Length: 75
Image 1 (cartoon, rainbow, N blue to C red):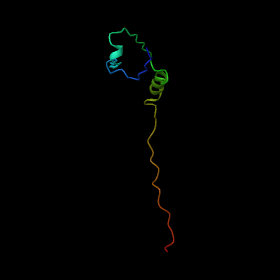
Image 2 (cartoon, rainbow, N blue to C red):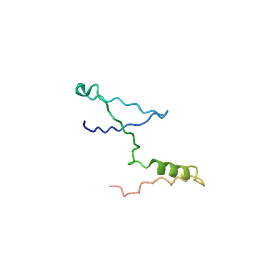
Image 3 (cartoon, helix red, strand yellow):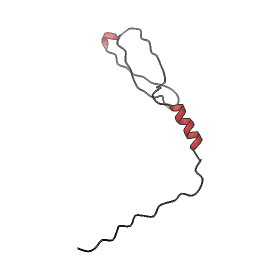
Image 4 (cartoon, rainbow, N blue to C red):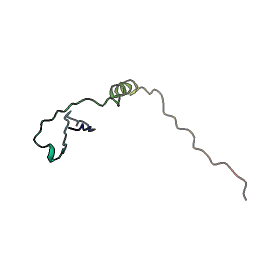
């Protein structure tokens, strides 16, 4: 059987739902499914970064002065 790779995401309840139409020629056969987290996204590192930086801002927000258009000689 040909290997099929599907990118999917678990729902908020932690349940993964898959619907894979494989075709009539593969009907009534046993299949094996391997689940592994997508390692291309360093989710744990990202979550740790958010935990350490969330709420860390101290001080007032500053807004720079608006850019005033330069004055030019009239034509």
